[in-house]
Image (cartoon, rainbow, N blue to C red):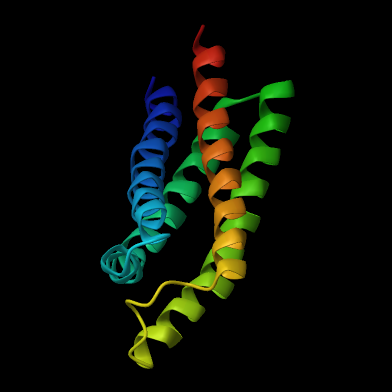
Length: 142
C-alpha cells in the first residue's frame, strides 16, 4: 500500500510541478514573440520555472520507473529522455543566452528570429512530451 502511494504520488507530483511550470513559461514565451514586456517577463520567470521543470522531470521519472512495466516503461523512458534532452538545451543554451542579455541590459528586447524558431521547436517537443506522458498515464489507469 505504501509503495503504491509513493509511485502515484511521485508521478502525479511530477505532472503538477513540471507541467505547471512548463505551461507558465510556454505562455510567457508565446506572448514574448512580439512583445518587449513579455520578453522581460519571460526572462525573469524562467529563473523560477527552470528548476521547477527539472524537479517535475525528476519526480515523473521516479514515479514512472516505479509504476510502469513492459511497453509503458519503454515509452516512459523514451519520453523522459526526450524531456531531459530538451531541458538540457533550454538550461545550457537558452537560459545562458537570456541571462547574458539581462546582464547587458537587453532583457526586454525581442529575441532574434532564428533563436525564436529554436525555442518554438523546443516548446513543441516539451508540450508533446509532457502531454503524451499524461495521456499514457491515463491509458495506464484505464
